[in-house]
Image (cartoon, rainbow, N blue to C red; front, side, top):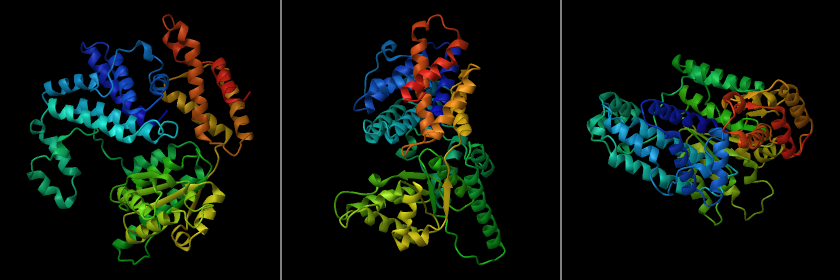
Length: 465
């Protein structure tokens, strides 16, 4: 389960629930059909399987594909048409409901386009095309921005850069501003971000390292107020550890923390690997890499498996061209651009040592250790809580033994939290197979309960126990 998809989905489900209470029926079924239609529109293949997995994980298996209303690909979602009409009739005329719908489909599309299991079938260009169709529909049929309340205009002005703030307040909205965009949410405070970091399961040494970096930044900022001339901080980092240990999650939080501390202007995280930087022809890699750098400017560029840029490559490989372009950007934009490289421990040490420029700029390493068996179990239970699922009493001992064995039998392709998520998805499928013939008579508690048989069946599928 992806937390961004779930959070965005929860907002849509809240809207549907409120609308159904006011007399609009079957909105959830309509919405489920729209999700299937959207997945079909952006998928080159396996759209039904992709939807069925979404239905199982996020909708508790309530809306199987063969029971959905027909939804045409490349069409405007029916739920968006309904909410656009509701927005238009509201006194505020703020397009808030339709924006929430579009935001969900944007988050879902981004997830599929970035996910290792889906991105070969799902094109981000196709996602953008569908979102543009939805935005154009709202622009044409929704509430005009000229009718929006002054508080909404104030939000737009606040989002503008300081130099253009007054100018934006006096101009008519541009086409870009007029188009529907994902629902704005207040930026998190430093305290909220640190609380999120602290709430992550495990990663105690990582949290300590990050806290030390934050302390150093705070002290140096105070020193600047007192006129102290301190050397510039090098905040580029090496994250090393096995897959699935939370490296991307921590990097995303760190980008936002750096923005709160005034180190970065935007605080976004741009995640790439070798394929996102290296092209196949001379001169093209520098252009491709520079485009990624421009996107990350003001935030953090996170390069996963960075060692693939240099490890075992011949003289004609273009990985070094990407490295040289990144090093130049790190030098030219040291005040508003941070790079974090990540990957397996030994390979990351080899990567940094491969180039004097890398060695001089990446002088801080943070180790992400494998999760312990108890932490693996807690990650599984967190997945259950996020989906509102219960477990029978005998599941507790079984899970302890299962994750102890998973930990002790770690292989070269062991993936920590990802392996837990994969096992959780197999448990959800085992539960679905057990319940499918009793859906008409099953109680809510029975439906939401995972039992020992589900865990055991999923373990067989995984090849353990």
